[in-house]
Length: 121
Length: 106
Image (tube, rainbow over all chains, first blue to last red; front, side, top):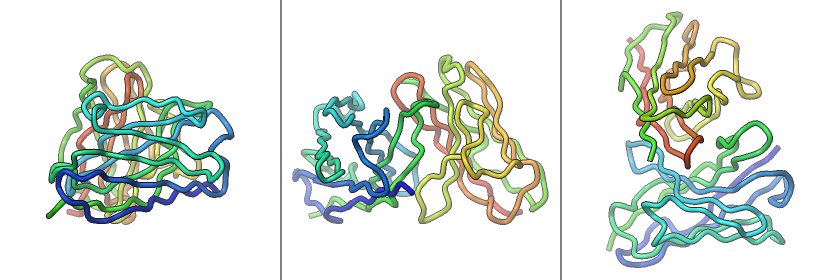
C-alpha cells in the first residue's frame, strides 16, 4: 500500500526558507504516470495546491506562488521536496504531499498525514 | 483561476438522513471533479472522481453527479462516521478546491 510521509521543521522564522521532504514507500516514485505534489491548508481553512513534479524532473507551480517555490525529486530515495522562500505568517499551514495523475484522471488519490509549519520569530 | 464555490458552508443533519452538498465551478470543468472527506486531524480522503465514480473502498451511500459547472455529492443515509468536512476539487485547469461544507450532528 502506497504511503507518503512529510518531514521537516515545524517552525520557520519570517523571511527564511522552508524545506520539506516527502518520502514515498510501498511503491516507486518513478513507476506509472503519476505526478507528485504539495498542497497546504492554513488553520481552519481550505486547501491550496502549491506545485507538482514528475519523476523526470518536470515541474509546474501555482502561479500565485511560483516566484517563491521550488519542487525537486530524488528518485534514488523515492523522495520529493519543497522549498518556499521568504516565508511570512501567511504561509503558516498544514503542508501535505500527495500523488496525482494516473489513468483515471489528475486528481489527488494518496495523501501524506501532513506536517504543520508555523512561521514566527 | 477556476473558483470552486460550495454550499452550504455548514449543514446540521441527523444520522440516517439523506444529504446533498453542492459545488459550483466558475467555468466549465466538464467532469473533472473530485470530492474529498476530511475528518479533523486527518488528511483528505478521496471519495469521488470524474464527478461520479466512487474511489476504491468508498461505500455505495456516497454518490456524485453533475457536469459543466454544477455538481452534487449525495450521502443517502448518514452514518456517524460521515460527520466531517467535504471538499470539491477541480482538476480541469490547474488544481483548485472549494472552501468546504461541514456536516455536523443536529
